[in-house]
Image (cartoon, rainbow, N blue to C red):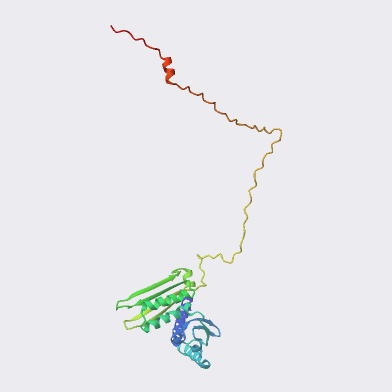
Length: 261
């Protein structure tokens, strides 16, 4: 078997196991699986919000699920390990199931997706995107999308850091598709650089030394000339003479009268 065919076979088998366990533990808050094949058999890590319902009384439920995997899918010696989900709001599978349940109960689609978006972002997620497709209001299909935070769309960061889950809901008008994308708070991106944890380094700038001042000998120093300003008093103005009527009469000559013939 070629490598391509082996990869396709493993992926198809993973999808079948995921669908079977999701249908089996829908009421237990199913949150996805991680499957690893070993020479001893298949090791399955099952994430659930309520592990008690997955295990069952005295482990009967988990034994029945292991038998179904072995008989229906032909999985050799499946070993299921149940792991509790500490923060359900950061698991896209659980949040998509909550939105689907809300829609089945008759909750308005906008109220359901905005409530889920707020719960996810309040839990510390870096970004979230919820996409709802199908006949929402009428027979004609449309979509409703809400986004908050940072959600990469392509490249290695999107494949490595973004968790995606899709569920389908059967309504009266038709089937709706619910897609939830969540960026966990511990995701690291190459374009996001953090300087926390670096040691504090203090840099001291070199001090500028003042230029040397040449010393002048005391003999060559120029004497300081003290200028004294003498106040000059203005000369007293000469008193102007007082002219009286008697003085004018004395100075003017007396004209003699000439007889008129």
